[in-house]
Length: 400
Image 1 (spheres, rainbow, N blue to C red):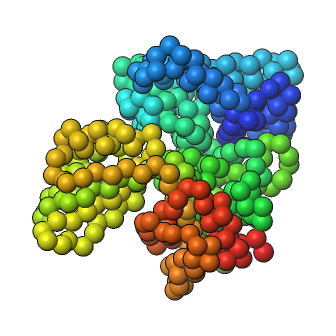
Image 2: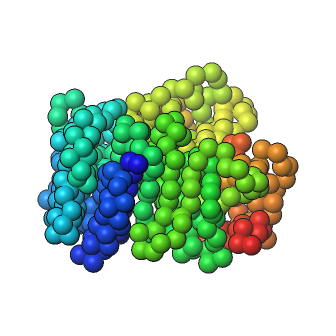
């Protein structure tokens, strides 16, 4: 059996945890399995690198940041190779260049195009544990790129797909996927299984357990994921296609404070306005999330949308520079998205109303609403985020 195991930064934060991870990998190796390990940077090392960069240049070029970021994962895999060697097990560490993980050239948020599997297969045939850097790749010019925060999950899934692995385990500092963040909602409960679609929505909406692009890729490639803790032996949560269990009305509540609301007032109420606005943003790689357009009045309309906090100022600058078809632009940063996700919503009426009732009971005002087949998202003031999460969690009895 070929197993891909990914360990996040907290799982390899110090010597003791490094040895703990090594032992878990060696158990599978000694049971006769082929093992590929994907590691993130140790602990908060990436944050230290960012601080160091900002010290040198408050606005460092993205290409140079990617060059710097790759140090973190390279240190993790090299040290893990030394640990396994010390435990008497043959292991080899490889970076993105040595494996050849090909990506696009969007520094800081590149997408994997393909992975060459030959080098890894060759090392596995020699009965070595292969330890690979997560989060990074190389573009067609042989520059290092990174896949965005949490990209090590995507690396692991892509490797599992390339190598036709039997299992892809994502180890983290929590026991699996919960109905809400247990640090914010004390009554949150661990799920035994969840569908790709539900997990994708939760990951996109701020549930930090899995990187959303990794779930997208796992669904596309049919890679079965297991999310489990590196700190204990609990079974974790299986992410797979159409779980056999009864579809829960709501599987989870997620929140994301990394959001800002931008409103354009007094746009012409005519065809092509929305296209021109969002085309300018798309050309600058700005991801837009919730979009609300008001009903036209007196020949004008308003468009409100949300972007990531880091993109808020840049979005306004792009609009002011390239798009002068409005009377006024407003920006609001103290907002958060709170969402419910569940495959059971499709066949049940009144789910949104129940969520809104929970917020009304807490006297929390809703600024925007967005829905899909299995999701309802609201935008609220960020100071009410945890209160809203707990109220919604309780209203749907998710802790029971």
